[in-house]
Amino acid sequence: MNLGTPTRVEHQLTDKGYVPVYTTAVVEQPWGDYTATDHEVWATLFKRQREVLVGRASDEFLRTQEAMGMAPGHIPKFDELNRTLRKATGWELIGVEGLLPELTFFDHLANRRFPVTWWIRKPEQLDYLAEPDLFHDLFGHVPLLMNPVFADYMQAYGRGGVKAHGIGPEALVNLTRLYWYTVEFGLIRQDDGLRIYGSGIVSSKGESIHCLESAAPNRIGFDLERIMRTRYRIDTYQKTYFVIDSYEQLMDATRPDFTPIYTKLAQQDSIPAGTVLNTDTVFNRGTGEGWATDGDV
Ligand code: PHE
Ligand code: FE
Image (tube, rainbow, N blue to C red):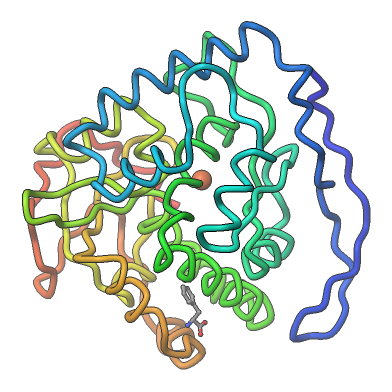
């Protein structure tokens, strides 16, 4: 497999006019080059996570994943998924080598294109790898793009990202925390209990169990500005998970112009990942067991 990262300079239109950005090239999914081992890694992870996620992932995640026709048999072809996805919500998947420059990523989302890393982890990386791969991106992120409300949220996030990029690095930090605590590590409250919808969780067996069943982490009601001030973990399970009531709540809460919010938050300190405030709606106050004492980002 070619894991090289071809980059080129492109000009993108932002609210600062056209700016040059280094962009990781969009690649055609080299489906014929996947090895038998690649397909086996997909099958193993797929079956393992589907089992773990029954009763843990949100009903809507499980439903949309099935509706997409994702199955353990072999690594899905982006082209085939795209036929279903385009019809449902107008989103499409594009293949990429890996993480993109921020503005490039926002621009794709703003145009309803979701970048999916084309390569899959090695068998010895089933439980953890530091960067997103095909399993995380496809299994984790793509199903909810079939949901019209979530699909709109992701596009709005992309537009908001382009805007925040033009405002400055502090605004981007605030916005990135929102992505982290919703899209990547969000929980949702169903009538029958808390469920997972965040991609970073659904693609991890350990965290799928930990985030719902462990007494260690905080589980706190969604609060936009609070989340935008909260630091997070990139190398351990989260210390705090935020719980939405519905995807509509997410959409409604993020509809207002963030510009005055960024200005206001610039005057306030960030909140450590594990802190509980007396203004929080607490579903679970974490015991903090096993928490690292430093390393929040
Ligand atoms: N409303 C936000 C803004 O004005 C954009 C946004 C929407 C950000 C949805 C995140 C999610 O910047
Ligand atoms: Fe992700």
